[in-house]
Image (cartoon, rainbow, N blue to C red; front, side, top):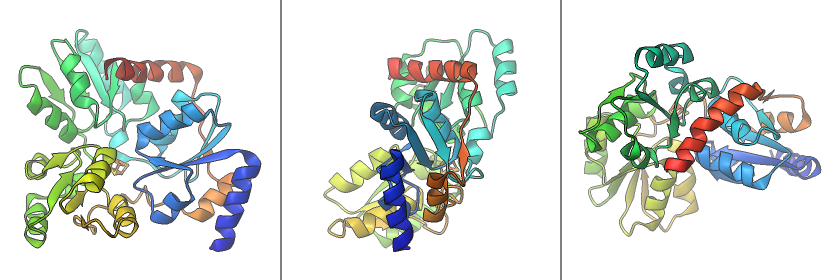
Length: 302
Ligand code: SF4
């Protein structure tokens, strides 16, 4: 394995490639990466770096987001099969149909959507900016796609708004049940619970904080009390050995596994660096322009 890591480092330097890794990747990928973070943070950092070539260790919509923000950058997804099931739980055609029938409505898309969906919506949100942005929207109806759990988290905060939820969900976070939470709390009664708002309402209601992956990490590292980490297990897998002085606990590690996020291996990255593997993300200019408009709106309102 050391040979592979050394070869990756050498080729990275030689080709001026930047390796981005989502925080749900396996710890060995996080170690190889130049930058880690959640999906939109990675796209923004890549833009700021102005890298010629980027390898995005994550799922397809994340690589697309990098391409939308940095169209001139060559963006490689090392494992083309790595997709987010939730990002495709509504089709662009359904959004177009909805807008035709509801011309006054505003369509809000979670950043975890394909580029084709971003191009059809009015504004994107991340899990950390969703509340701030929806609060500012003034429309007779708001369609929130695709995650009904994040959508319901937002809807609860604004009962005066007419928010329609799409029936999508993250198949990883949505597997957690209230019983899982009660069990974890009884095992670690002294700990605070941090969860991702992609979890079901019955789970989120027991949490001491609900927020994006970056917010959960920040909460875990700054809390004076122990913390149970309620998001994809990669986060706890990385933080627990790295910060042994902190009392951090997994929450249902057997359930909180995103298999698509785990496809990437150092071998895939090496092949992508050599130009012998992975997929170069290609998006039509018009699609990039439309999708970027939704992201620009997110930045303007957030
Ligand atoms: S954890 Fe859920 S939302 Fe994130 S990539 Fe996996 S399936 Fe998609």
